[in-house]
Length: 408
Ligand code: GLV
Ligand code: MN
Ligand code: MN
Image (cartoon, rainbow, N blue to C red; front, side, top):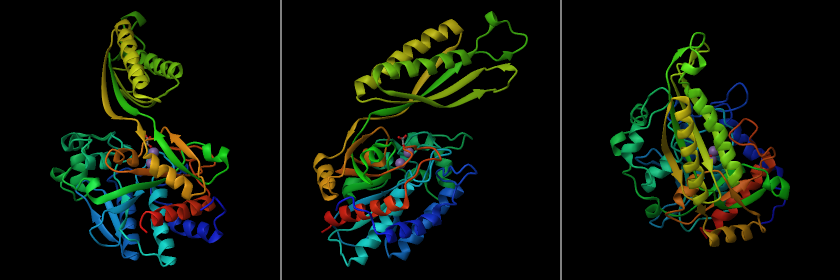
């Protein structure tokens, strides 16, 4: 299939289904808050079940909370597609849900063509992909591969102190059963995740759809800076033990280290205790997201930051503790699968990405690939993230083409 314009009914078909999800979790600025195991998440998951039932797909939820809707029966391993519903706080609409909506529509297309798959096709919703609520990204897929231990998952907490175990219980799951699901490689033959592009390569290349080559290694580290709370108006500068200073220094040091290493480092989340305008902070927690072209570089950035933050803490009379909350190795998507898909889609461009995905997690277990759909702004994890209905229609057709090829 070449990147020729999709008939506009592809665009309107997409829009019709997309509009059903659009109000769920939408904020007044057009962004989204769709945290795992919240009422918004429950609405999205009910919609998933409804759509599956409308299509006579078999719905299963595994012990990790991941949902699967399967077309076709038999003992053959299924071709897996789909993505995730959850968002970062204030994120865009497309990161995740685009892959699920496109999967249902791709099945519709194949049925309209009268196609019968030779092996089942399964649409997935993987839970807590963003780690927006509980901090560890791709939690549902990592639990399923064993990359995260159930004990660790159960004890993760959200910003209000609710544990993952408590959130699961409230949603009707048994937290003690976490991890007790079949390994993905036992059920699935390959995984193709369609996703909005998080960058502008397809805009510059003037193509609607691309194929992923690799994901940079990345991780999340929590920095806890401890000092001493005191009065902002009565404490002499030289008597202070202000963790905000160590924190501010560390943010700048991270940025500098990333620039020197041609990597990326971001501190996008911070919590200050007590958080009063007229009090010196007692404690600052900050979360660093760092990504680099290779693992050595990432390791170098972290060890440099560790040294620099500790040296600065001595100067400020504070203490610093650094905890790795998650780390993801480099992912090189299956070359043969990637090249085959690119060829099928009329030499679709092959692009690397800095973003993490469930497809990256599953790539350690089975052949995985990703399709990217053009994002005019290039922005992601923010309200400006998007894709035109026309391009989404083209994405659906591309996914249908790929699913058909692998289930002939
Ligand atoms: C997920 O989108 C991530 O890259 O953090
Ligand atoms: Mn994301
Ligand atoms: Mn995503």
